[in-house]
Length: 200
Image (cartoon, rainbow, N blue to C red; front, side, top):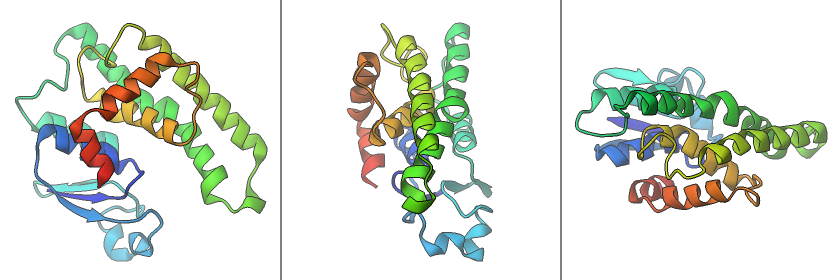
């Protein structure tokens, strides 16, 4: 099993999942923007020249959510997918909330504050993405009242929306009025598997 990886990217989600499952893997590590990611040889792995990508069982997958869903379906003996019907419904909702709601404003914010040169940045886009991100986080803050994890016990939803919340906090998201998310962040960061993934 080989994971194509860069720090501070969605590939951390996949590494976290692999670590929680206790699966051995080989790491091909890039720095974001590294020219080798645009090479034709790597585009045979990931057509967009991005991370993550995972090679396993003769397959190549290159979408973080699909990789995690595939890994959780492939492995047996874990409790990362709730069996209770109501908890499973919440699991699906919060698994997909990351890419549907949290990551779009994060993507805009990163482009406007990190990737674009200063003369091409638009302050209106920066402010709008920060406002939208705060709205998306506020919904999770309300959901986490009285809860330790997104869908009953610790689940695969943490790899997706939990990781998106970690990304938001790293980018300076406003957590000053979000005690539930602040505590949730601390619980996630206390997990040895996440600590290993973040240290790669």
